[in-house]
Image (cartoon, rainbow, N blue to C red; front, side, top):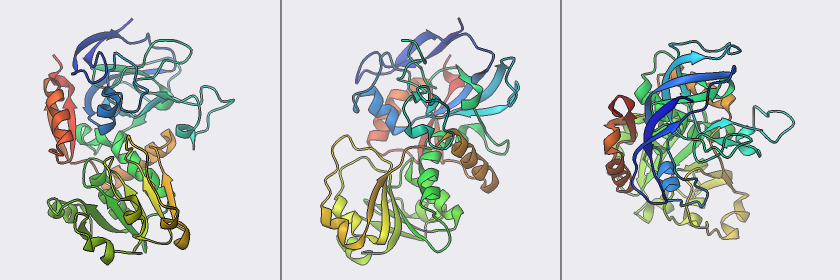
Length: 347
């Protein structure tokens, strides 16, 4: 079986360290990918810490994978060696369904995560993109437009689709007022995408420290949520609010910013329960909703949209050996706006 090199956490809260493991032998419908870059998602940190209680160790994180095809199986028709491709948050789906649901697969039973899951029908863990190679079924490999650099495109495979999906579903566009809560790895993608869709974009951030960046990326307005006056000024203003933060917030205060029939969408996943008062919702028929990535079909749509609009993440590229320091810097909000690991540094 092919041998891969990567970095893994041996147990919950352990530091990531060099790890050698086996990838499966490619099947006739598989694509073999040399990983060039992998973005660091905040969910990687949650999973390493076992913050959501479902981590499988040893754990090789990484689901913002950008690379180059090195080989394809005999039944593969969409890809050839040399193609620029991506792998996102899952590598199989609908494994317990009668047939694959290409529009809602991310929400259905039988989803196989790119890491911290199990290969279908086995006890072999899936290992993610903090590694030099991966083998993935053709139907779960994505084409990265040639005009997008692989390093800055890598975060689109999670951060990009995590924001694109709710923005499209709740019809962000001309005439819509959209607020993005948080100006981090997810939030800065929300600003870029909502602006490209034609919406009027407001950033709601704890401080004004990143205001210049937010306006440059496409926001029309930028407010500090640490200022109580913000919630008075913006009451009842927004059609859609997308919350990208996983820290504690005053949920009822944020819901008060919605118009009648407005929607507040949670994409950042707090580890603690969300306390919401019924009357933050009832009087204005407001909706509190959640959204999780997108299907492969929608993710490809997002990548094509980003190729058309020339949208990528703002990144800081790091060496693999610096990944534990990067985790600490993410916890301190010390990155603008997404770390990407250069796999050429794996050694």
